[in-house]
Length: 83
Picture 1: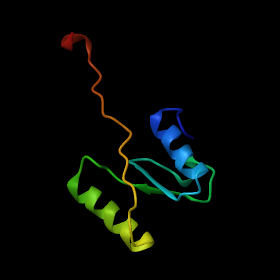
Picture 2 (picture 1 turned 90 degrees about the horizontal axis):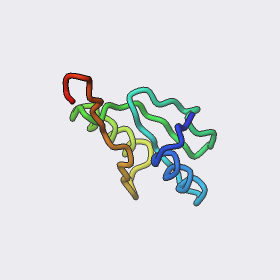
Picture 3 (picture 1 turned 120 degrees about the vertical axis):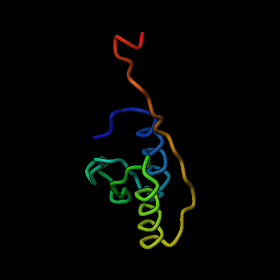
Picture 4 (picture 1 turned 90 degrees about the vertical axis):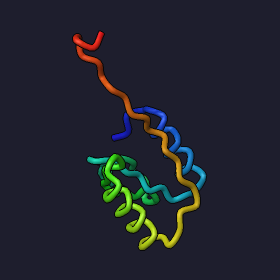
């Protein structure tokens, strides 16, 4: 299920416009968005090999990437010692 963050809003906007959206995350599922134009592909974008495999999978299935949007930022959670 989408968590209501920026990625969810951007994905919903592309889907509402009639676009196909490929979403990726380490644990993403095809049920993350209940839309037949949403495709989930698991990938770890912090790993260059995994990111390359994602691009290859998208190109093999769709033959092109029209828009690439990275809308999930990373964050580091501080523990009490870091403060």
